[in-house]
Length: 449
Image (cartoon, rainbow, N blue to C red; front, side, top):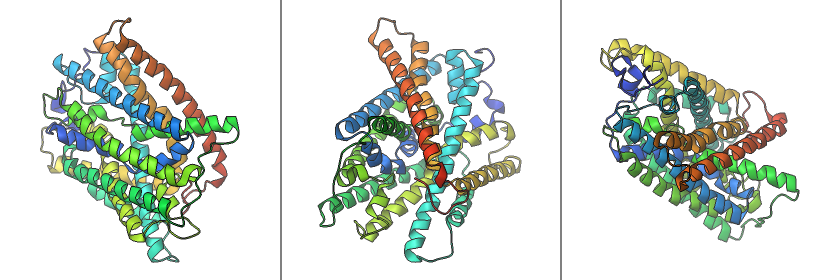
């Protein structure tokens, strides 16, 4: 397997995905921008809902443990990438890293399958949520207007087709810097709105009790864990590290530190303030809790409107980031690296293939407005293997720590615990999918939470 070329730059002369999409020009702070966009997104608005299935003590504990484990996991993966680079095998793709270190051809296809499912799922979900943001703003301006959700999804898809023509991951660095600012912006607005709602005379009655039946509490807890895993998930760290100018050794840790500083500020403030106000009535989208279907708004309209605009703008960046793996796969063969990135030979196929990809994502977003339930399943069976199991396995295989060492047993323990959590989370998410099935309707204008 090593002889056949799972080496990062062995075939770069004929690899358009490496030369164009994953061009290596970035600094460590650019990697920080990319990582933050990949992890800190509107999914943080579901944190209060995740707390609802766990309660105060267990919820905050799980949030902290998940943060510590994912940082440790991504740190280990960056160490493995550095180890391979120092050995003369710089890897720029997750699938090639896994296949090389584990010496297994089937691992190459396993990773590419999981990555494709996650990245396409995030792209579809981002388009759906962006369309929903536009619909919310439209319905407030024109409550009885003729436009439906799928009209707004089509608008978002058109914008994404245009933005998708940015040729490389590195070319998104400025967009992802603003994405970081948008995440901080809507977090501040939502936290302020929650504090105002919690101290107002119309403050909702707070109840932090869990499900009365023990079995329901268990299912809710594992569903919440799946949500947390998906929120912290990032299945494209090797591709992000690939955007760093070589030598990349040590640079990714600085990017991770930047990303997790933003995570600490946004995740805890959104989780604590949202759950404090709404308790076990927390909605999967905290904005909906602040703007209930019946009764007065719990926050000023301009605050919620600005938060929705920030969310909308960041969703474009998120969809772009998670599309890069698809583009890299397509251009690995479709591009001719002997000609320029903007030559007619490479420009025309890029426009056609990326346009088709975005149209397909838009069609699925319009067709499946109950994608949240499907995404829960994808999170459980996708993010957990890539982010909580494989990095520990790769580290143990690459560095070969002694079986009597603390590092070895920490890694094995994390793999075992999260394998079990992933299986239970997948079962709980599939169960919720089945229970919600009666609400599903293709091309519906109502999003099923």
